[in-house]
Image (tube, rainbow, N blue to C red; front, side, top):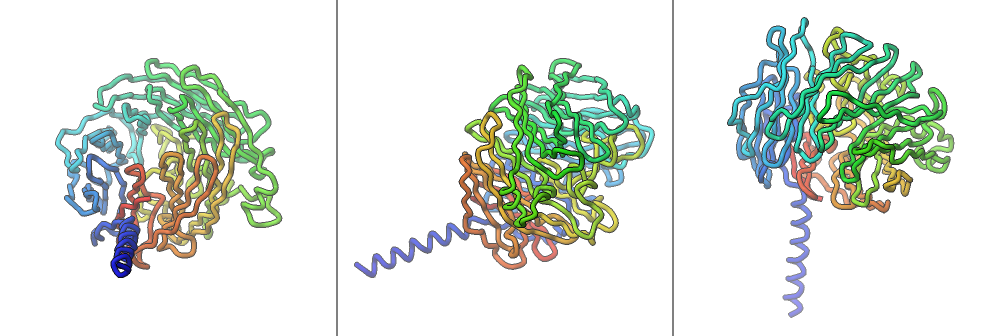
Length: 523
């Protein structure tokens, strides 16, 4: 009997070990998936995982089953050559996805959409959503797209910036079947000396929202407005933010559909070019547009010392950038901010407003001429506020000459939680020290949301083959789960380009020697 019990215990422990080992399922490494590859995890369609890949102008969609076995590779033959292709993007719906792509033929820029089925195939002809005539050869996208949180609507828009004092918007709102719901044109006055636009978002009801702000030559924001263009009309409304005597750093906008409001948050200082002193939060009702709350949360000396680890901690939050606003089921929300900086390059906080490795390049965007410009108005930043999921290899239209010598660093991560009225409830600091040369692919983090838990997924500092899972609950409890050990020392995970595809599941890319592959990780 004792021998039987002992054997049963051994079997039980073996099953536990197998379950733990199977929490990471690796796809086979494809030798054609080189580090110069651009990719985007499209997501889960039916029971398949779809991933877009591009190498040297060859585009394809790889289809995996739930065991990360490759089912098929589908070439995308309808895309134009690289010299004419300006942008690609994927938007996932319930059981299909759209590929939106922009390209130039002669003097015409096209914005097309084509439907992708769960097996990765394209069965229908592309649909032209809009065209624009320009008098120059474009080197980047003209249109920007936004999708509503419930996946019922998608909008494309363009901004004509030829007149620096008057930006002309054209917006087109579509339903999930690409039926045109509303086309609008309107003009937005701009100040030549420092007006910016950011945070373009689409509410479930089709309202289009973004932020207009004025940045001083010192780098500070002293004036900002929430702009909302209702779905069914051609006019927009302005709702100024009550900033008082604060100087904001970089305002982020998040649509909180569960609580029917627009959330805005930013670090602030109390003087020009001053040290970061706290967090500013504001909320407006989606329906009435009345301000729901406005709060400021000052960082005390104890928190600054904890963040920096030094007695002289006035600059403790100066390298932090907000890159996550997380909505909770209890009506509260959390703001996650990470220390991001480079060494060996020319940028400091005052040289890369709004993102650590990119810059806005002037009030009207960094692009050729003064015609049609990028919708969000700036140089591509790898730390754009919401995870772009699109990995743009720096060997392909990347950040340019000299960036191979730059070392990218991601330091401590601060997570501030607030109740539904914007009052701070808890704060947590995840201590880490990550760095990589020539690429930022393996540093930083991604968030997996599961009920009241926020899983912060990142490579383990000092041992990159381990995948850390730090859980913070709605009530502020922080739990450090056992690290997920990679199968061997050649695996370097790229969690910040991962994408949640289920309640507890994320597809995470990883580099393996001289290739890139993907893994399904269950938390």
